[in-house]
Structure formats: C-alpha cells, structure tokens
Amino acid sequence: MSDTVIYWFRHDLRLSDLPGLQAASLTGNVIPVFIHDEKLGDDWAIGGASRWWLHHSLASLAGTIEAMGGKLILRRGDTSSELNKLLTETGASHVFASRQYQPWSDELERNVHDMASEHGAQFKRYPGTLLFEPGSVATGAGTPFKVFTPFWRACLRSPQPEAPKPIPTISFPEVWPLSDALDTWNLLPTSPNWAESWASLWRPGEAHAKNVLTEFLDDKVQNYGDGRDIPSKPFTSKLSPYLKFGEISPRQIWWAAQRCKDQEPGRASAVDKFLSEIGWREFCNHLVVQFPAMPDKAFNAKFDHFPWRGANPSLSAWQRGNTGYPIVDAGMRELWQTGFMHNRVRMVVASFLTKHLLIDWRLGERWFWDTLLDADLASNACSWQWVAGSGADASPYFRIFNPVAQGEKFDKSGIYTRRWVPELKDIPDKFLHKPWEAPPLTLETAGIKLGHTYPSPIVDHKEAREAALSAYATLKALSSEPGVGQ
Image (tube, rainbow, N blue to C red):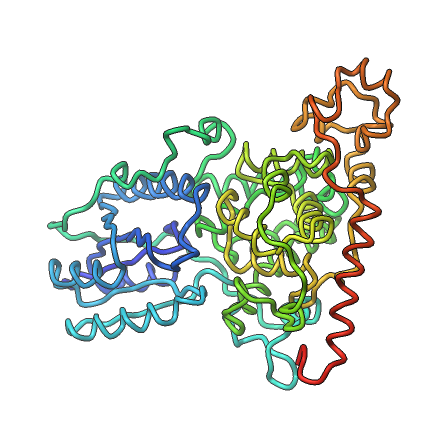
C-alpha cells in the first residue's frame, strides 16, 4: 500500500463514521486536505458566524490529526485549482471525498473528477452527510416527496442506516505539501470582535459533538417532547452546528438514539420526536437536490406574485431586536449575541418578518445565513419558505403567529425574554409581552419609557394581520387565472 491519496474534507470535519476516509485509509498514505474556497456558492459563501465555527472546527480537527502523526493541509482558493496543484505536488493516485448536496456541488464534483482524470487519478465520492441518499426515498409513483410526514414515514420504513464506523487506522506520507496557517485566513472577527463571548458558549469539534449528543440523550431528551417549545429550558440538543459542519454524522445520532430507546423505553416517544427533527433536515436536503433554486426562489410559483416589501427601516429594527414585541426582540438579540436562536422563537421571528412586516422571506433567510452558527443552506431555505407559506408542505400563509400570545404561552414566566431584553426585567409578568398595555405608573415603577428605554411596537398586530390576509387574498385571485401558479 504505497500509493499517496488525498482525502478532501468538506462539511464533514470529523474522523469517525466517514466512509470516504475509511476507503482512503485502505488505499494508501492519506494527505488530509481542507480548501477554503471563498467564492464557492457565490452569494451563498459561508456567513460570518459560520466562519467563526469553521476556524475552531478546523483547529480541533488539525489537532486530532497531528496527535495521530499526520497533518491537515490547508489551502485557500478555487477548489479545483487547489486540488489540481496538490495532485501535481504529491502525485496522489486518488482523491476521496464525501458527497455534498448544495446546488453547486454536482458541477464542482464533475470538475474535480475531470481534473483528476487528467492526472491519471481517480476521484471517488461517498455518502456521509445524510441518513438516506437523495433519490432513495420516493413516493409510490417514484417521484420526490413534497410533504414531510409521508417522506419521514417512508424513511422509517426503509432499511436502517448502516451502523457508524470508528476512526480508521490511517497511515500518512513522509513528505508533506505546503499548508497555509489557519490564522492567515482571518475567519475570526476582530474589529469589533462580536464573537468575543462565544468561546464560553460553544466548543466546536468532533469530540465535543459526541459529548453534546451523550449529554442530551442521558439528561435532556426525556423532556424534549414538550420542553423543546420552552426557550428558557435547556431541553433541545443544540447539535445543529455540529451537524452543519459534519463534526458528527446523522448515522451516529440515529444509532445513539436507537440505543437510548432500547435502554430507556419510556423515552421512546421523546426520542422519536427528536429524530423527526433530524428527518426534517433530511427532507430539506432531498428537496434542494430536486429543486436547487429553493434558496432563492419560491417553491410555490404563485408566491412569485406576492407583494413582498424590500429592505426598509422595519427590517433593521427586526435585525437589531427593536420591534417593540418582547419575544421577537429576545430571539433576535439571542441570535446576535450567541449565534443561535431557540427553534420555537425562530418560527415566531420569521412569522413576524414575513407576515407582520410583509418583508420578503429571502431577506430573513440572508440574515440567518450570516448570523447563525448552524446556517445550513437547505434547512434555512426550506424553513423560511415553510413559515412564509411559499414552500413545500408549508404552513398556510394565513397562519399568523400572534407574538404576544406566543410569548405568553411559551415564556409565561418571562425568564427567556427578561434575559435577552433586560430593559423589561422589572415589569410584571402580566404586561411583559405587551408593555404598551401597562399603566403609566407600572411602566414608571419598572423604569420603562416606551419609545425611549424600550421601543413602542413598530406595527399594530391587528392591522398587520389584516394587511397580511389582504396580501394573501391577491394570490388566491391570481391562482384562478390561467397560467398563474402552475
């Protein structure tokens, strides 16, 4: 086994349960490579928050590989060009990688295949980022599913995903190509360092991903069924950033969850609910493979005619968490300060943007892409379209979350809201989610001056709801016209 081979890391920054790396280790001495292609995906190049995670994830992966006697080679530039250079420099006989499913991935992989062939090398790609390969789960008619529930039922009827594999035994070459220093990529924010506190909140890397999964299944999953809707409670897994960067595989999660059900049958229902969220990730990725325009274009064509508003001062107020609706502002501030937002609150803030403000869902999608650590292209696009009403299996457009009712239902005690909107910390619970209804003396006692210490609502809920329903009515009229929405 004297061949030198390249393993090209992508969104799979781990060493265990990585079929492509397993194959590489059986073929030759492995040169692990990561290429930072800042132009890949064009407008969907990696966002600011994700750059922070990528830096620390690569540092963790490099440390693990070095402990095994190898090196992680870092290159920045066009992916095909850098792999071309590496094949010339190393004489590698193979390039191994995990298959990816972004709209641009197939073309990139074809280019890499053709470029490798010119060197007399082979390019081999393997599954590794999903439970089920796109195209393997279809309706009885052989077409892609467009509704989540039957899709996930079909997945559950399919043969179980293979059991995850451990870290393979890897041999490394004696001579290494040159590598960039990670710090020269400037992935971390500096002026200002808006992520200064994130190191105390998050620990990227494969080892930490496994710890987070174990802790969740051991201590939290039993409360997941109902607790996942309560943003003040620590009952969600927070695995999404680790999944986004491939520091843990969905197969590892699947099999750990099955073991949990076997060992604790009383937790089975909660575990299945958790796994259905992994299923939503699967569904989104399968959809984007079939409908690659989904990040930019409404899945439901009639929404091409919806009277969305563009960027305006209300968008800025939403981004900064200054809408005057406490649960919305709490979510947006949590996002800015931590790179994360509780899933229930994500739905509330997305509904507010698209239905109270009638602002194009794509502007919200872009903001999340830049500010979320777990900004996965498929999940982000599908989830925004679900809330906006334009997506596959979408929430009806006329389903408009009342932000006051949502706050009172899911943050009744106000722990979450008061944490992220401390201006309201002393207001009684009765008025926390609607401070504009508080008597003047109550506001004065709580140190609140609406419009000064905390904003007045930027839109009236009742009026916004009527405007949204009126806008939706225009789509119903259009859908009856020949050729519209077909």
